Amino acid sequence: MNKKILSTAIATALGLSLTSTASMALVDLNSTTSTPAVFASELDIDTNGNLLTTTAAENLNAKVELGFGFSSSNSDIFVRFDLDNGATWATQLTTENLEVNASASISLSASGSATSNYVIFNVTGTSNTGLGQDTVITLDLHDSDAGGGPDQSGVTVINKSPVNLTYGLYTTPTDAINKTNALGATKTGRLLEFASMFTLSGTTTTAVAEVTDDFKLFSSTTASTSATNRELAKIGTLTYGTSGTVLNADVVTATASEVLDSTATLVITGDFAPAEDIFLGNDDCSLGTSADTADTIDRTAGTATWDVGTNVGTSSTYSVCYEADTANPMSTNTYTAAFETFSDIEVGAIRRNGVELQAPFITLATGYVPRFYLTNTSAQAVDFSVEVQTDGASGQACVLKAPFSDCANNTTTTWAGGTGCAIPADSSLLIKGDDLLASAKRCTVVFRAAADDQDVHGLYQQRYQVTGDFDSYLMISIGSDSGH
Image 1 (cartoon, helix red, strand yellow):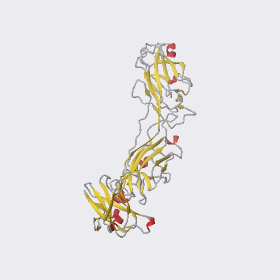
Image 2: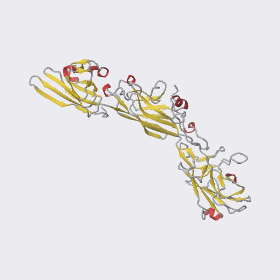
Image 3: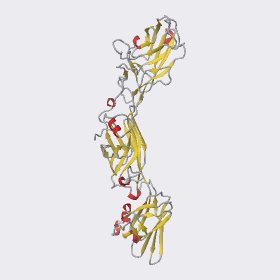
Image 4: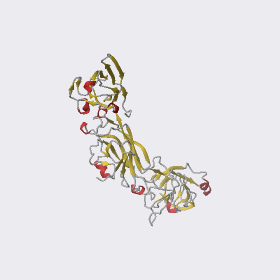
């Protein structure tokens, strides 16, 4: 399967929803809900901040009602538009850049040059009915009505902060220049702003590494399919891709290839040392054989990388699916993602369940009788597994007897103390050293129980037969998520 991700085809195959924003149109200064032109924040404006229309789109136009009525042939009408935040007109404006929704004569009175941030037009009504206060005027930065096609007018920006447009109406040139004695209130609206073309977000769906399997498998309650497929789990979700309609410098809809290069990557960071694979899949990770796997996993650096290049489609949501190698224990870990300007977005987690009870030193030497008391105060039986570690200087290996040698896979074998590897509900379990170990000169014994560390406790006791003396201590208890 092609490992370029987030194409519409993959999203459709996985049954994922696609999102986009509404298309943009001209800005209405009389409306509080008007949508500005939104440009991709990934655009490089350091050397050329021109946002220059090349098609007859309305994305950088603005309309407003005149706001005051005039009789026919009244020439004392001066319309002024101002840009803020250091923005200027991209080219010299002409009379064709102002439209009046009535019979009128238009002349350019002041400024409108490529280096200025304001323009003043003089409007004269030519009909017998004059110009009503609700007459709509439009600052048309693409001049869609011009006979020769659109003028390439626009706005030049110096940074990626929003740019507002302010309209004012005046009756003398001096007032228009000085912005004094405006007729009615001036009107200001957002003309343009910048937003990322892409999105990256995530949620954590914590998967649990099972203590009784030495944390090499996931708990059956969090495995992605069933207990027979416990090496695979959904650890979180990731949503990423293009975030909706944004514009390029030509004031038309931008595409991912315009702002991404062939080296663009999606990277998830975390502990991948015990991972067989990681992929972006459907909700329950059941498409493990056909979903999108990472192109590279660097287990030393702790990164999984998808080489997405410019092939990034509409934003979609994926499950972050982790496949354990079943040979190495999984550690408690949080996973974060990075793409373009987004980083450290949490997209998954693995934690350990249960509790470890450690008896640091035991022996089966002649005359010593060791015992282990495991107590379970919960209302249900608790499964456990056992691991022994040999003191290398003792000269004798520590070896477990059945069923303890295979607790993770054995729940039925009857032994002297009971059945299987479980502590009964609300009860204690005595395990004698001779029943647990085939040989042991000097050993450490670790019980791993699938329960809360507040419910399971352990006591180690050793009796010296010659004197009848007892030596006992509470086992070291290490709770879940401790990293051990």
